[in-house]
Amino acid sequence: MVERFDRHISNSRAALFERGLILSDKGSYENKIVKIVSELIRYGSKFHPIGNLIEVPIFAASYDHQLIQIADACAYCINKYHTANPSIFQNYWHILYNKFRRAPNGDAQGYGLKIFPFS
Image (cartoon, rainbow, N blue to C red):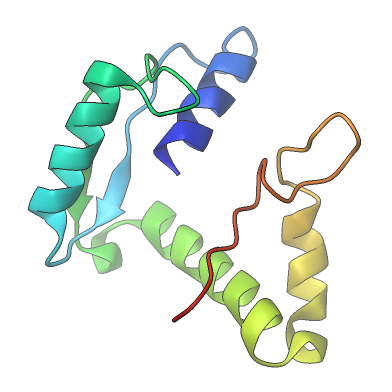
């Protein structure tokens, strides 16, 4: 996710902004996430240098921030479309899918959409 966000900033720099900040929901994994993102900022990922983040993520309660609530709602709808009942979430899926970053061939999978296996 950090790599994709950094790449979005890099690709959109002229049109949108210069650098970005991650605002994330508070949780029990904050220290681990800060450590991982700090290492990504310092060393980059296996595939991409991370050079467009201002600092490590800031954590806040989702009920205090509308942007976190929007991200939660989008993730919920995408997850339900892929794991529960696609017909109920089909309209939301189509709205969100049209916003994903895409490969040159038009495919969002692996570019703007990453699906991780559930165990």
